[in-house]
Image 1: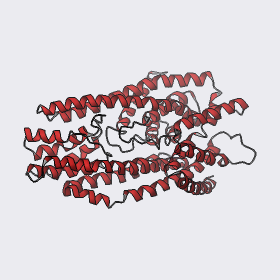
Image 2 (image 1 turned 180 degrees about the vertical axis):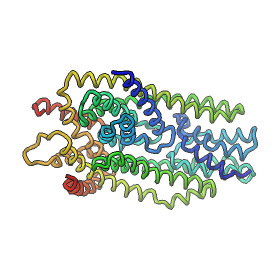
Image 3 (image 1 turned 135 degrees about the vertical axis):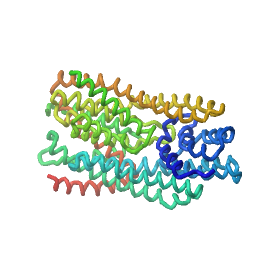
Image 4 (image 1 turned 30 degrees about the horizontal axis):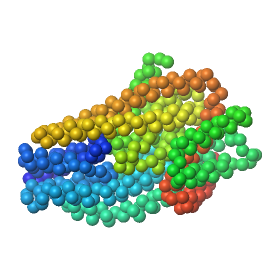
Length: 257
Length: 233
């Protein structure tokens, strides 16, 4: 039984709930089985073959949620081949187990460690530059354009081509893009420090600095020091709280307000 | 505090619970990112500028905290929603200006985010119980259990997030109002204390590129930013 485009679309929509049942025992296994279930029902006759297929996909699974779409898609033709007797059931599991680790590493570094900070800092920069609500909106639209493209490309190519989708996704050069995006985020972070300083000078109280000193003189060194501290494992939230408390304490002590 | 005011806290807790789903359970479309969640909360409460500023203060603090494997970072969405709620319904409601109100939100939002992490750990453990039940049901021939359990996990995530938002928001809003009325001079301290806060998040983003490379590019960006801020004046 082949899986129709409408059933594939249903499976794709369900990939957005991959992590609904995330747990420490088998992580995303429940979401994987949930996303694939409409296709499994079509491929395998009810009873023992269907139960065996669902149980197969309830085994441990964990990868980046966006990259998982490709593996869920590619599992559809693999299951079709299992139903036709062209593959052993354990080959489906082997394929998932072989790819999920590297896809997790690629997705975590590209999306979580690069694209998300870039989007966040871009949104903050736009807000400080006076773009208002357009800043967060542009972040969501820009980020999701990339994320949705990777998810849908991976899923539908996977559903059409099977494991060959891995080679297709490998052409996207995630590692090179990750490095470039992190550099762009750092440059934008520097720009944001200047925008924040300018915003604070316009909207905030006068900082207790010597006559003629712009706030930028202290802002950028603070950001650089905190970058170094973050590299050494200091929590930015803890650093922010400590600095804010120190600033408030100094102001209260010296009677600057 | 009026009845309508109480209802806005409840409505915000509901909105926060839905936004929280985007963190892990559904979508991951960045609606739960603190910059976005704070702006949406501020807009929903009728004070977008405060929401945006809470997003600026909180938004980048956990940029380097990655939800890799079983690691659960602080719940920055809860922090942003609680922070905006406290800023708008607590501080702004008694006439506090935008910057000290947003900073008041930061003071409430950061501990809320750390507390929210606890809820996420509970949810994930509960999901483990649901998953074990599901596996038994599937082994007994009930494959629909996969769908049933997924829906149960979603409902539990929404209910848990709603409860936590409400339990934190109610006392935090009252405490902010009480403290700001008791010590009106504290708004000046809050304003001044806001200055270094976004710089911590900015530092975390710079560090993400590697310290030396990040520093070089950030210096370039900062220079361009200085020219821009001169032009914006």
